[in-house]
Image (cartoon, rainbow, N blue to C red; front, top):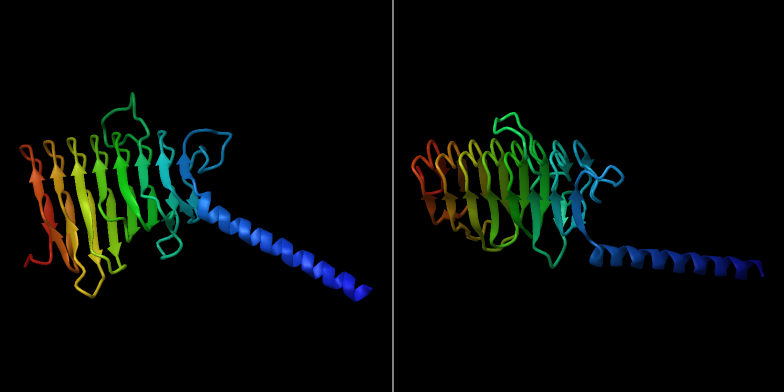
Length: 255
């Protein structure tokens, strides 16, 4: 009858809808990949193609990799609105890696690295930011909400984090540590601005285990503001002459 055919059609549509929903949930739970930005002209951004200048909607990933010169220059990853950033997939300790090579380029501030001027809006268990080539994170901006316990950032080469910004926001009511903020080479963190905010209201302490300035002028004009909330910086190491020239670190204990 006509009613039977209509009911059968409705059941089929309901079954298809359920299958699509289950597939989407499976994909979200098990199929997140590393978001890779390279120089493959035949691939899409995130799949090996360039992300240069792109505005990329937030999604769930296992990491972000910008491994070619200019591959993420000026790109924006997600939104600063909570829930609309790049979320670290559950069960992972995610990494942002800016490693585009500047081989043959000069050491002048006008040279360009893989993540120059990029903006990363990150949420969840992000564990590590690695800027391991000259000027690879120059003028880059990182906003991380509730990163993983033991979070670290390493600025490994000359001017690798020059004029960059790192904002870390804690609102998840869990005591956590920042393992280290590490500036390895000359001028690697020159004019780098770090802001740590702990909005927890239940005496949850955020501990920065170490700020390491390992070479001459490595932390020149580095600014760390840790005045918002219960935050402790255990160690600041200025390992070479002038490592911490004009460096500023403020905590809740400072007048």
